Amino acid sequence: MKKSVTLIILLVLVVTFGGAMYYLYQKNAEDPVVYETEAPSKKDIIKKTVATGSILPLEEVLIKPNISGVIEEVYVEGGDYVKSGDLLARIKVVPNLTALNDARNSIDEARIDLQDQKRNLDRQKSLFDKGVISKVDLERAQVSFDQAQQAYGAANKRYDIVKTGTTSGFGNSANTMIRATVSGMVLDVPVEVGNQVIESNNFNEGTTIAAIADVEKMIFEGKVDESEVGKISEDLPLEITVGAIENKVFDAVLDYIAPKGEEENGAIQFEIKGTLKKQDSVFIRAGLSANASIILGRADSVLALKEALVQFDPDTKKPFVEIETGEQDFERRDIQLGISDGIFVEVKSGVSDGDKIKVWNEVKPDEFSN
Image (cartoon, rainbow, N blue to C red; front, side, top):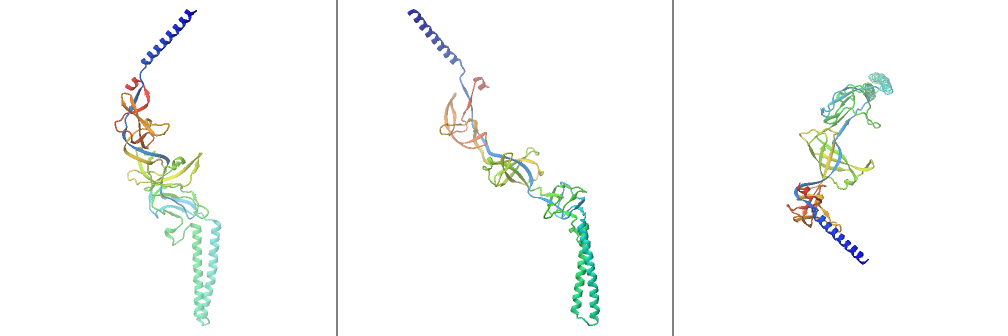
């Protein structure tokens, strides 16, 4: 019995010792953990946020008629340059029957009054020649006749305006001749010959004949999310990229941020505007979609490293990196960070050019050699 127990104990010891030796052998046979390193470098770091929008003219003027009618002729098309006063289109008036009838009745009333004043003037002259009335009475009759004659002429002109939109003596002031009120490029002519147009008045904005703008003064108009609006301010520089114009960046300045946001697709968006600097070599068409990179901060030619190399102390939350001091030997070194673009971050202190910084991901020796 005692021999059996002794044999069992010896057997357990032998098995345990053998297992321990095999474990140590396997452990020694494993490849050592190898860490890659990267060195900091000099970079230009730009911190920015992006807004989407479009390119629009700073001022766009919509030309509208002062009289209703039908487009009889159009003299310009989109892309034409015009000066203030240039003829854009001509309108053929379609008279309103009620207004036309009222104007005709006014002519008849003015004619009757004129005839009456003429008879009265002739009578007063006859009495004056006989010495019955004074010269003052004659002059008074002459004034009444002149006023009636003026009213008759005005009634005829009013009838012509209602019927044709113009009358003799008005020249370039005729309502049927639509002229440019500003100088610039014609962006759009939304009417064609035969289209009916409505005059601009207090109750109707009227039909647009043409849209004119100075294309040398363009702005970027876009929107930013509420999460970004707190990071931006007026006078920040913008870098505008237009999808239709490749490999070209346009400089601009942010000069407007809407004080009130609007809800779009469940998110609050704030309108922004930025004035583009004048471009002599590139023509930017109005309405092109564009993206604006708002420069929040910038550091040129500074020592930087990848953000992925930075670690943070779990207690103090301060950043640090591990610097290689020997073959796969590393020491912790606290650092001070500056501006970041999301990939690279500026290092103000803690590391120097040439330091080898530990990459977190461990690799096998064959991977490291490759």
